[in-house]
Image (cartoon, rainbow, N blue to C red; front, side, top):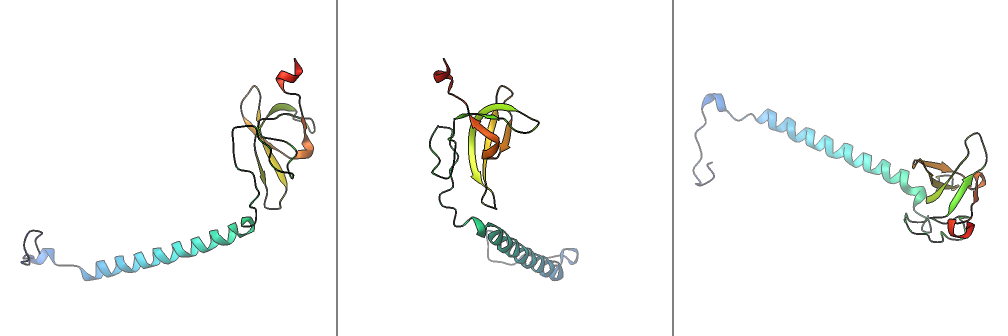
Length: 132
């Protein structure tokens, strides 16, 4: 049918409607929907261990306490003093691993890249205002 009338349009033999093509497309769409639903189920199952972590700290750029479980605060200056690589930086985030172990993301100064460290690898440095 044409868009502006209710009269059917004439189809030439070369323009015959291909029912098989559209049935295959519909089957493919159904299969895609089923695959997507299965992926969603897998992702939901993978996120299940995190459902009870309501007190995990949110990302923030301001210095604030991160609860009793965390030893450092966002914005606090720290030093990584163990291992081969040693550096100073600022805490920019904290999180719990799947095994519920604490980790800190530290922006290394002056380079600016970020490293992940466990609490036992870090110690607090005095704030610059306090050091002067």
